[in-house]
Length: 359
Image (cartoon, rainbow, N blue to C red; front, top):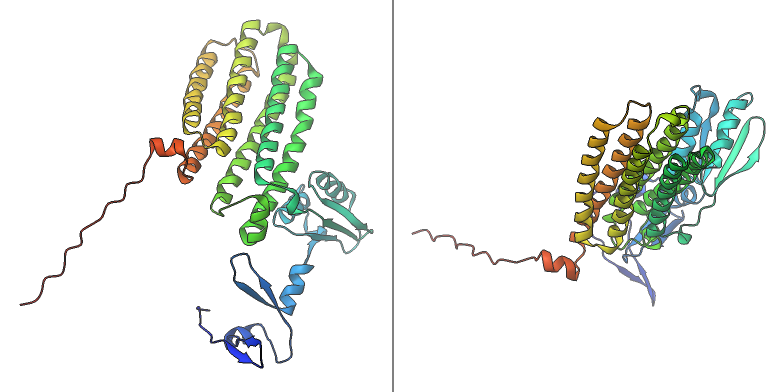
């Protein structure tokens, strides 16, 4: 439907009315006497909803047929997708009985989805309900929390290599579940913010244009957590070759790990501070990381998993550098004294020639 104008009509002493577009009334099967709901938006506009639509928004249920999820991990992924899309009520059903494998999948994934819990359970149905309150979260808190978890996993994995401590490596691996929890919650809230301005405001977004960039940052931080877990797993696999690993090689890997960690940690800081110089320096640091990693690849002894660890560290540095790139772009979009000292907007007045008169 195209935008239409409507004249306001005064009825009685104080009531103002406006007619509804006939086409919209027909599409929604609205009849005289039916209820419609009027919702004020933050921008001053009004949203008009048929009663059926308003009821769906209040309590929409998403039903998953477990019998059709006949591949491993399929049910779990559908539940995650439903959670991320903002579904508050999810019902898993089966014609006969929900199998043990499906029950295990449900219980496993519920532990990784903040606010989602099993409300009811019968042999044929499991009802899940989410009770996340968006007002309790801010986008900067979620980004910093995920950055801290990723950093901790990498620190523990590196320390496990230096100290030959398998327990520490196992703790790093277990910690990756916490990164998934924060990531899934953050993406759920960001998707809701894109369609509901009031949620965007609660999350701390002054401008909706920053939501896609924030999701990209979160995605890279979650990948860094995955890569850090890979480092911890490679450290465990290196156990049988430890006596062959020179101390100098361990020291070099430790230095590369600290460099990769500094890149993505400081890049996240630059997202919020808008410091162009530091962000640019991080991109140069990543070049150094790549050069040192390549040198290690050529000089390292032929021991399994050593090169895999270093290769993973370069991927972590690369993702951190991409976050620094985003920080540069965001800084240019938000005016500040530092940015104005480097980049200025100069407006030029263009002279438009007058059309020549016909003789």
